Length: 100
Image (tube, rainbow, N blue to C red):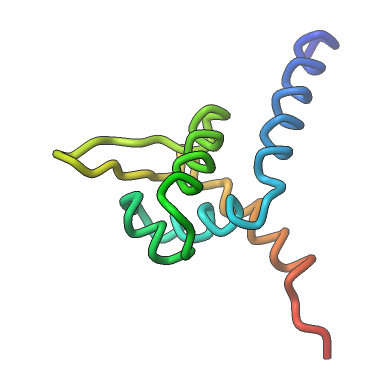
């Protein structure tokens, strides 16, 4: 693999990790681990406003972390790649574990 290609891939990875470095966005990933959810379901589960949720979802979609589909008036989101759950699981294991 050439160095320029690797540099570009690592820069993309860093941008994606930067987007994930927010508790609400990590919670969105966690919730979508069980499958597709509507914007309204995500709002209710997390307890934030529609405008705030829209901003978070837009960032995640822009970085190709989420995909969406529209059905009538609702928009549904899902993980673009389920392997992302492995990354967030490791994060939870490292940082969210209850200390004895």
